[in-house]
Length: 363
Image (cartoon, rainbow, N blue to C red; front, side, top):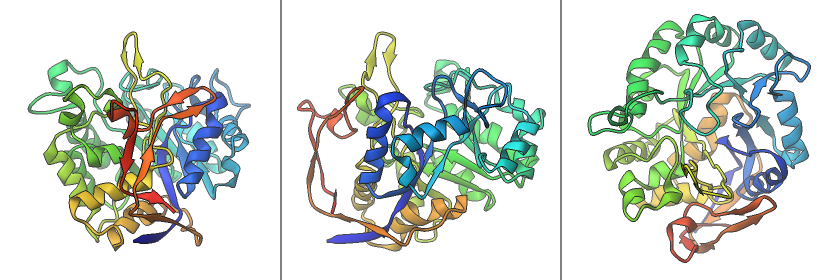
């Protein structure tokens, strides 16, 4: 079976910096992407809009130029969120939106994930006028929805975890205070977060990664398959099943593809394990596998909605007229050798051989 689909937008991915960027961009082209949303947690972070603006950090203008030089100039759209820091002001939001460079901004919980040490607590932006300026200027808020600074049992415990706490205690207050602010809950992992997204208004949506649809924390812990280590952490079967149910619903308009694809040339480090799964080049096949394993029809409307339509509709992007194709034919996945080093894609890293087979491939 061959399925033809409109080219799709990966609305959450990491393209890093330096020599590796061109290889990462090329993998996204290879898997039928029409556009990308490139995360700003570089070093230094992308924390100002224009290069001429004050601040010892990169600008959206600079990072876009890097992406374009790495081959992203042939995408239909390249979105780069502003990294929200203590230096972000309402005027920066207003001026950035008027310039056309600023369409979205990313909240990171301080020290909550890779490159998040520049962020400030969520309440900072609710109190200092930044969120109101975003609402007034139609700038989308991309949220890494986890509570920072929790103890171990609160961060990931039997009764609650960092994501559930954040969505129940933090996001609901933001929604009440800023009812018109457009928000994307990035890489949601729990039933509770999914339910809150579904119950919110049309201005609230969420991305879901392939790994959170295919695996649970049990898969990672059994034999410690550290290539499954990502943030937010994988959760439980109840959570995975709820996310699958949400995206395989033909009426779904709230959830869409955002891979959080994150390459690491050194996954294990002296102080722990680098967070992130690399799914560049294979994300549509992984999403198709998740649909297939759930019993949903990959050729049906729900898969097309999730992968190709819901995301661009939320962001106001054009649905491409050109297409790409996937087929239910096996393909072997192996390590990729990039200029910066070897990156092991998600399925391959789970096998001792360093190779894995997917049941879906690109045509």
